[in-house]
Image (cartoon, rainbow, N blue to C red; front, top):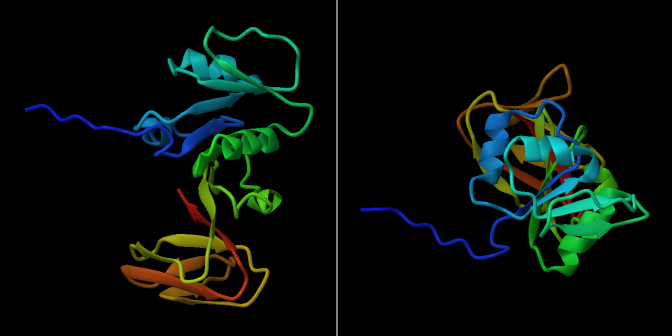
Length: 187
């Protein structure tokens, strides 16, 4: 008996590769598992294609067009990441995974109300959460939390490095009054 998965278009988060660097290929494979729409920055296009990946769209500030056929071009005169987020929102995508050198979620604050954004770097996964967010984590898991307002958590203890460590296997819950809290997990 064979197994078939039906994935509706835009059901899975799109994947935008802004900077690939030394991003772990296993994590990249997991992000590509359900064949998301793949958008890349023109600067990493050649490297991504050399990995054998099918690119759906390229974001570029240049006028040159050296990309394969059937690739959508997102031309911009502004920040590539903003252009990609604007494009995905206009195309009604509910979520996007971004691979970048740093998790600059604070800079994407204007977008988090409209599209679910998860930023992956070589060492962490960062995202915005809403009040009441709850997630199961094993003991010893580490969160970094951008402390911009008062918040409460269950099952976390802050260590001497300012990281928040899960005390025991189980749920971690976040309570706060701001619209979002920016957190990251070590990969």
